Image 1 (cartoon, rainbow, N blue to C red):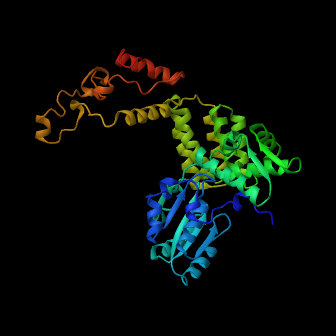
Image 2: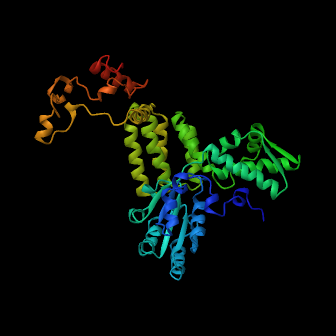
Image 3: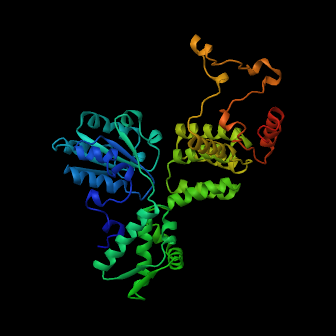
Length: 421
């Protein structure tokens, strides 16, 4: 039996787990719960290949508790009830459900009673935001832990483990001369990285006893073996990436093509609609404010009708967004503002725009000299709104599209040289 390298390297003990130090590092919140012997039901939310399934297995092994597992892709309500019936005869059973976001409402409802009564401790794994995909009654009974992509140091640790495995188990000498390509194709996904390494080693094993891993070799072999590299179906993430980038790049033909790819692959229409909703704000923004309205209408429509009919509003919205003027100014503005807040901290709000609900607050100047904009011409009064330390800082930069050119002109007429519009 040909066991994938990633599976062979799956750690057997919690202390050998790589990554997610914010959860299972020394003194971290989840490790404390595990060490106490009492874990809550939880949702492990994070991208592919960051160790969600491994962490669930290690928690069960560490606690020595019965472990049941279901895949939301292939399990129905009957499977859930069968597992719960078996768990009733065990003590402190853990039920792990992979891809829990694919469970529909009735399947999730079937878990509620068992979770609430403590018949099972649920560990759900998802790549999707549980706020959207997990029903509120179940989500309220679970702690959500967010897992992050592995960083370069953690990925290197995995590669070193793989090299040691090849030497000890398969008697192959693998030398990592360069690792950038392996890390780049992985995108922080440990499984994809190890899958890539395994394919490269296999392709070179018949040629050389000693295998030197270089960036050029990795890229050449992966291009030649793309289908094998994606054998676990994770090209799903490449297709959604191509879909988003085609819309952002104003190519409706490519965008609808990738939409069709996702529909044919059985992608959840709500997943696609959510991505369109995000893109409408991130990439179109105020260049065309109607884009967000249409994307939201599409999202609501998809929730109501599902496939196959939802393919039509999805196509309509995809084409509308692809052919719309583009601006990421709002996206950049909030990131600029967040960066400024992190650098400057909690600067004092100017006194004249503070709330003054009490006499004492009014006496010490809260709200004093505030000018009510609607009392002035054009509903505008020239006054300071930012803290003194960052007065005049321009955060929002209108971009070069018809709508935002108008916004720039209007802002310049109001503020003059203050914000350099």
